[in-house]
Structures are given as structure tokens and as C-alpha cells.
Image 1 (cartoon, rainbow, N blue to C red):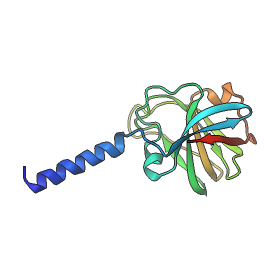
Image 2 (image 1 turned 180 degrees about the vertical axis):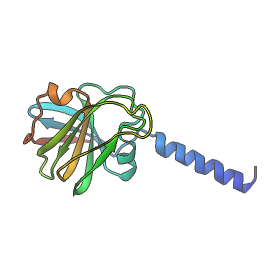
Image 3 (image 1 turned 90 degrees about the horizontal axis):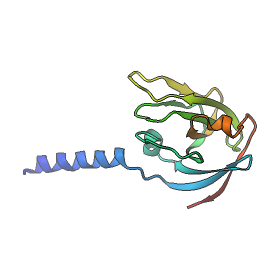
Image 4 (image 1 turned 120 degrees about the horizontal axis):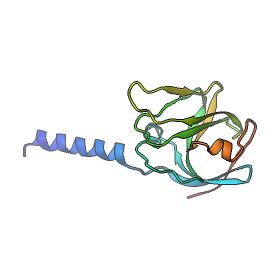
Length: 148
């Protein structure tokens, strides 16, 4: 194998690793209205991009908390997302601003874009129906109980 072939093989291996890994910054316990959720923290751009892609299952009290450096308008799509989700947007104080519920997986391109209307610094993804099940409403606050 020549050097060009080896370099190409290494590049492909790195890309496969980066886009298929399920490793995130850490896990945390997050509480909203006395309901505790085990969440994966998505902090980096790669983690934001991957989100819950290719997951076949998400337990009832599990989710992913996307953390951004500052409040902003954000957009999400469900490309390669296999499970329906709720998106819950929070401000920098952890106060619930808005939610988009029961978002179906994207079946074909182009995928629908889901965006917040108020600047948010945190976004919580939970299994579809969780926002209603746990009676989450505007003004509710989350607290991080612990993280690894």
C-alpha cells in the first residue's frame, strides 16, 4: 500500500470514528419540577451536530442537553434521527422558554427545520410526549443535580 492509500484509509477511519462515536462530554442528572432526567451533555460542535442521530431507543427519563456558549436562535432537524423527540428550549437561567413536541424522524430529504423564537442557551431533547407526560411548561426551571 502506498503512502497516499494509507493516508486515505486513515482519513476515512477518522471520519467513521468522529461521526459514529456515541461519546459525549459527560452525563448529568437534571431536575425539572421534581422529575429527574439522566442526560448526555452535548457541548462541542461535533456533539451538537450528532445529537441523538441513529439512536434506536431513548429511555423514558433519558435525554440530551445541548449547551451553547451564549443565548441564540437555534435550528434542529431530524436527519438520521430514528425516534420521535420533544425539543425544550431554556434561557441562560435554565428557565423554559418554549417547546416543540412530538417531532417525527425525517423520512426523506429535505428534512423539516425546527427553530426557537426566543434566544436560548440550552436545549433539552427528550422522547416524544415527555413534555406533556411530565407537565413541563413555560417558566419551569431546570437544575443540574450532578455530573460525571
